Amino acid sequence: LSVNLDVSKTIKREKFHTLLALALVTASPVLLRILVLQSVLGRHVNENYLVSNVAGYILSVDSETLERTEFANSGLSAPKGMVVVDDVVYVTDLTQVEGYSLVEEPGFSLAVSGSAFLNGITADLAGNLYAADTDLGKIFKIVIETKAVSNLATTGLTGVNGVFFDQANNRLIAVPWK
Image (tube, rainbow, N blue to C red; front, side, top):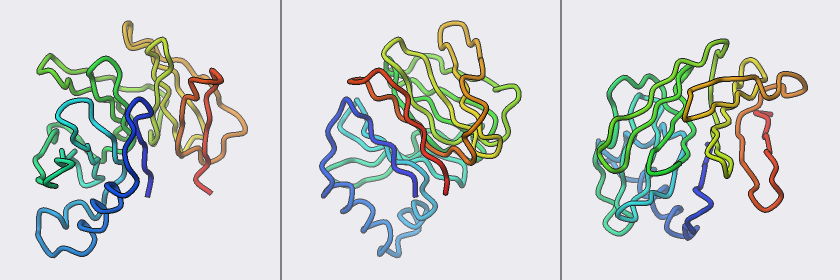
């Protein structure tokens, strides 16, 4: 289970645990769809959670009522890590990074050349994205504005799974699978 929390929004641990517990113990077909969840993100609009699911979609879950609606499902294969930058939710999806606007504007789509299994994603203060490739042990830097992609790190990252940008110390933290 990979949980990516938006650091600009404080999410109470109890609410997340309640959401997860309901997903795990409820026999509702809609809630059972959350069982293969990959990532949970605090959303900037309407106080909802976004839950990526490796079955090919992202759910929006109301933080108060736990009502679920599909946020995104078009063109997704196995969405994983998510991060919000300027009202766009960016999600890693195998060898792609997809972006979904929170304010109904056109989205973002980028095939990341040289990638195999993109997983965690984060952003720095300048709005650059960093996507971890678990299979290749790489971290790709993506400039949102130009869609330029470069290899930020390619050695010593066996099974890199999650990434987090530590704003206070201006550093990127990578977490391995094992």
